[in-house]
Image 1: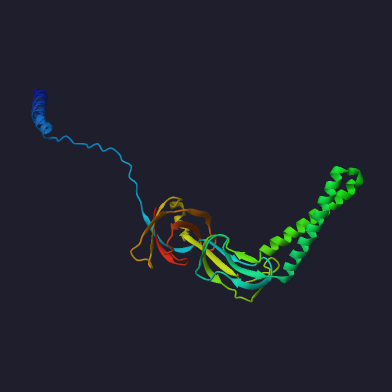
Image 2: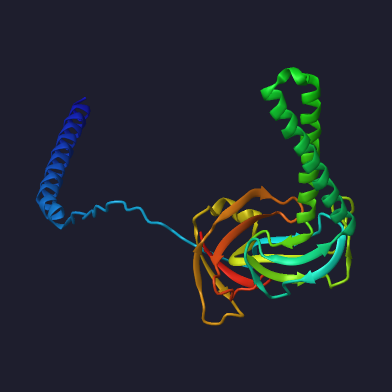
Length: 288
């Protein structure tokens, strides 16, 4: 019995000693941590943050493509009345102004009709003026019906004469606008047919206005959304070495061709000296 009591007392003593040792170790560790903490805080570096204000930056790219020069205006001239060529006033390469005479035709049948219709109109006019004077002074000498018949006859003959006179004026071929004659396909003595009643394949003359050149560019479908009227364009013709034309996009068709999948874009280039010829190719540099 004594032995059991002694064993319990020894166990209690050993347990209490172990608890005291643990408490001492914990206190030692806490002191060590508290002594090291200031050193660690002093070694930590404070991060530096830069503040950057956003800026708007425009990004541009260039598209290089080939364009074809065409005339600002171009027309094929055909005869509107039949006749024989009796005179040629202008030739290929000549500069012409609007209204200049290019050639003269002759139509004897039309000339005869003009003379006949003129005489008929003058006779009816004389009759009408005489009856009109009588009707105003003494209306009882003639009836309103007779007067209206004479007046109608005069107006009809006048209209016929004016129509024939207009056709006769068409025997003189004139330039519809200022430009350069690029084709002449008639000779003196040729018989020319009325193009209103037939469809001749060859025009009498071809005229181009190249004081302004239209540069036609077939823009790929993928670039359609990147271009607009007024955009800067730099044009270079290989035939005109050392010359550069800085112009702007003039117009767009706003339609993509189904077969080529391209959209037509036109650029006007001043050409007062006519250095650029219709049909020339140019390198076009578009700033997108």
